Length: 480
Image (cartoon, rainbow, N blue to C red; front, side, top):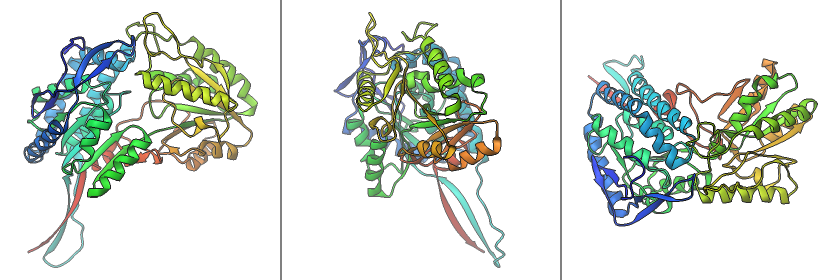
């Protein structure tokens, strides 16, 4: 698989390719041209994938944990060996710079290794209750067949967070990648079979969310749906899943604030700050989309932020000097442009950017865009902005900054910068979010739980806590 052939790509069901009659075109974000097609899984293929996973579950849950871990480690090593191939697939289908796509492949391998090891540390309990000739055994079992629906922005690493956790504890998984970025998921499933995953343990069906995704969510067999995507779709999945009292893990939208206090050494971290706002062309959920800067440094901060952001090179993902590639598809580009235009109509000001880039080779390019004068009631504050758009405002009091930070329906992540650690921890305690970074920006660690509050989601991914989401507790009362 090289991402360039014209024949339709197939689903991966029960350890083999499975093709349907309908297809979906894959468009290169860098050029706007169709470069491949994938199968649109219909009811027959979706049901076949789910029933296959029912069969695979019987074998996989009975496989010793150490053997499951060994196979996942083997898959992780295979990902490392083929990181160039996977990176090029991700770059082609997602539009991200090649170096970032390679890093995603390597991060995927690390996540698989982590879950393989962490699963060996899951424990049950035998409480010391002291009843005569009786013990109470509290054990964990795999939840069953899992459906994982993943987004286009990080097609491999987001999948690894779900797949690694599910497979390591003995679940079987049906993955439905975003219709625009299915190739790396199909490739990973093929590699999994080669590394020893039994047929049915890791199936992939492809197609649009309203068609293929809906069929999966409305299928009665899965016992857990794990979804990363928009808040509105997440709510629909939760509502449908209520028919079967089925578990859901929802990692939904973000509109993440940063509070920069007057004592913060902001010039030391400004380059990192700009990167966190704009990397992956702003297409990820826990980026900084809103910065609240104390009045005393606001002017300097804004000026230097604008200068750094304006230096970022936007262009084709295969150009090694490019930092920001195209947006993934035409709909994303149109949505971002509409949000910016509406904000300006409502009173916001554009400092830089604000219009799509028309490049000779086509593609869906949008420049770094900075808005000021954004007020809490504006439309752009009520919606996640999935593009390289940042809102920068000022504050007089910390209480006002916290109110502004908490003023959206989202609660995924926040960032605080202050030399006064007591002050920073106070702010962290007041922010209604699932994760807070203080005085540093980096990726979320696999050992720490990740997820949101409010309308940013339910449940947690990564860490022991994320692993436990894929299990059910069972209590056994043993008398003898």
